[in-house]
Length: 341
Ligand SMILES: *Cc1c(COP(=O)(O)O)cnc(C)c1O
Image (tube, rainbow, N blue to C red):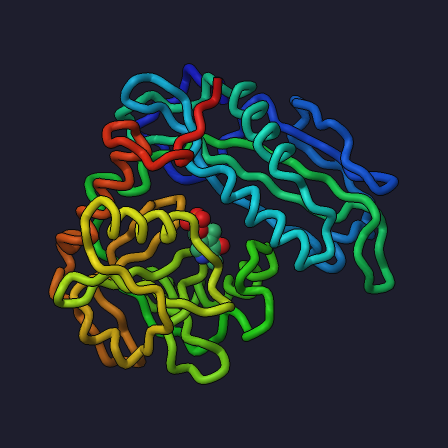
């Protein structure tokens, strides 16, 4: 779709193909320099490693326009670090931080008309990913890979304000201890699809996963970390080796402590404790924070005092401060805002 035909404030959260994307190939033990191309299709051998054994990892971040008209991304160095960790875990050759940032800059510049204007609520979602391309039939890592980055403009996540959602405690597990829950791999999402479809069929918005070993600690949802607020205003986020380290959640914890002067705790959180919390939210790049109003545990409901009409007061302050920092209305900590020049 041509950028000048987009109605920014009525965009949904779906794939809209833009004109340009970044592609780099790994062959004979090294990455090439990478180019911008107009070809959105990938031609792969039927036996490609990614198709047979799901050897692929990804990232997700956004570019947007600040109040003073700069085009920026938020902490892309952390996405670069996380992609390296994901690559290492799946035996994929790593993409260096320099190469990652270069790719992000090139692809955003090539699609600069698709960066939504300030105030529209829309953003340009950036999807970097790496996958094994050569034929692999015996189980082993591929020898050749592609690193691609495409962008797609997405609408405001909450149209007409963020309404609290209802989630349920899920009977399936998301990630095993010592498994792959801490990396951003497509395989973690493939195995969550059954549960999310089932949750939606039963009228729930999301699944709350508990720790696979004991089913007594809170992990996360399929694609967002939990933040809780205690009745005395402490911000608590669950800690576990099988939770994906959300950049949004890590940033919100810093905002809570340094900007709002709140006490923060990153520690294992027992499911038993959840009923005593005052507020609950889900953190991720897409929505920043989605407020949770209700958790259904096999028919037993935990209803947060913040209710089903609006975000809890501390969740709201966190949301407004972080989005204010991102949009350039509030001064950002050193290194958080990466300008695309
Ligand atoms: C991407 C992702 C998140 C959110 O991470 P952000 O860096 O904040 O976007 C949380 N959980 C899972 C499982 C994810 O894949």
